[in-house]
Image 1 (cartoon, rainbow, N blue to C red):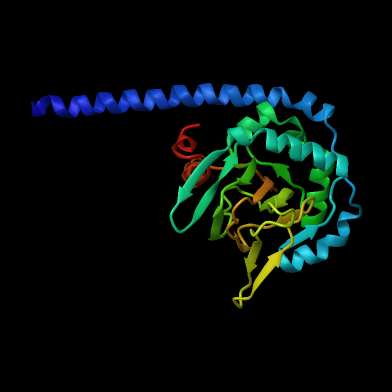
Image 2: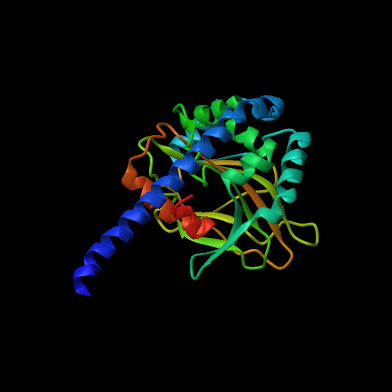
Length: 272
């Protein structure tokens, strides 16, 4: 019996590795197809930016590593983005990690297929120019294989939240998180109970206004932050994006990144 055990294990490992390689090749072909189809989608859905003079935020970002730009897009553009986000709530993947987070997200892949306005916002050259001007470095979208490159963070149940954390940087260049608030409302028409907070080095906790149409840009691996729990009937939807000055990544950090993404998209993040 024992003499067959080692060869059997070796065969199983070889078959498992072959299956993973085949699956990854199939997924990479899919991502390439989605990328090829993206250009006409972005061209057909231009983003109307209402804010002006991004350079006015550069000094603040250099000091604080976080800025909020109010009324970033036109009302019509915001309405289109929100309609699209609400229409995709059925595609939310919910996760719960005790003591850390509870909430849902719509992945980059789903947005690429079903949310052209949101996809176009992320890949808009004008938006990228804004982020580059604010941060002081040329930024680029992160990888298609990274489901968190572009996602909709959806807090639709009471108690949805994420506790104190940094957005770890797995890429070679500087890494920035960008949030556009699409909805942040209570059932009575007011603002939801959920707040975006950051903790300074001296322990001071500051609240960042995330009323609808707020664009928040921050260097997530330098800013300790959280989203406090929603109340009953609250709805909070953020278009969440990551940009990087150099989006290359090595295989080990790619593996660690996938482990991190299980917090948002479950175990499938390990192989998809």
